[in-house]
Image (cartoon, rainbow, N blue to C red; front, side):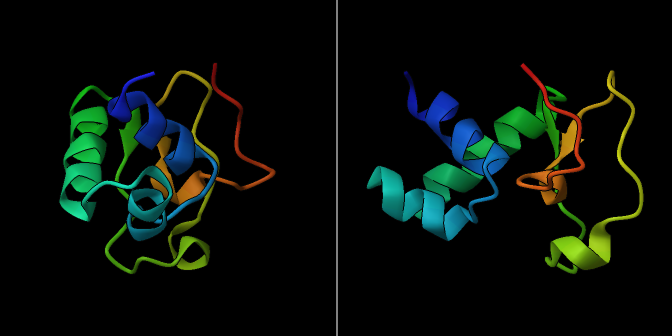
Length: 81
């Protein structure tokens, strides 16, 4: 797997960029760049500026919509392949 794929896997599991960087042994700037790339591709949506998943959670997105990073790790969020 590539670092890009590894970052996506960690983000979907609910890891923060800092935790992802530590787990993968890379700079947090690289993790941020990977997340930005996934966001531009429409695979994930950035969490709202509040940073807390609970405060940015309102409803689950429809199955065809990109999954916001704030939904990572939520047991109610729809699962994506």
